[in-house]
Amino acid sequence: MPKFKFQVTPQDLFSIFLLLACYPLAQFLPPECGWENGFIENAQSILLLIGAMFCFNCAYYYFKGIGFTVGLLYLDMFMRELSWGRVFFPTGIYTEMGPEFISMNSIPQHNFINAVIGAVIVVILYGFYKFMPWKKLIFEIKFPIISAVIGIIALILQYGGEHVWFSALTHPQNQILEELAEVIVYLEMLNITQYYGFEYLKYVKK
Image (cartoon, rainbow, N blue to C red; front, side, top):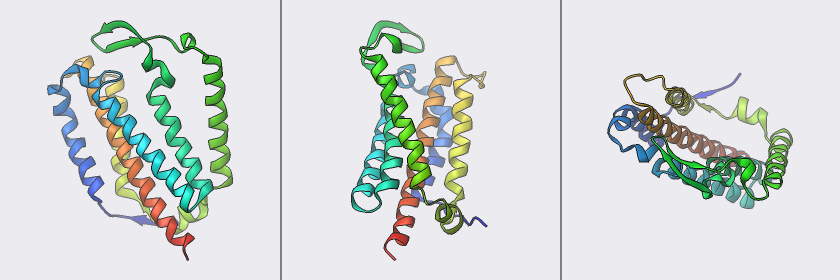
């Protein structure tokens, strides 16, 4: 049977605070904060890059297969956050939702980029199949239920903002809410990744 860990970490407390602050912040922050390439999106990219660096560091010193696989997943998400390079090619057109960028098909060497994305996804899937110690992760290491619940709530909030569930907010305000919730999702991803990394290290060092 899976085991559960009911513990609130400092990261969880910060996520809960941000979760409670999302709605009022969406009302008062300037629309530019929620734009593509804006402050909040850049913060998301930094969090994903930190996650990749943590995993690659684990791969270098401790467990190569798992660390490299999860690090590659974080790196893939980081590149997705940059729209696979589209953010570096703005069209110069701005709407209330932010700047517009050229299409993926207009990026130089886009066919090569698509091929690399596909290859990376295959490597990640293979890594999860080959290297992940599922038995230890599911049945021996306690699952951090609090972090997971916070992340799921944030994910629902992110989805709601993206699909403009909150009628009391304008479309740009819903976008800010979506991006803030996404920050919480990434914070909890990092929290859970760090937790499992250190817990699994105990097994490796036995």
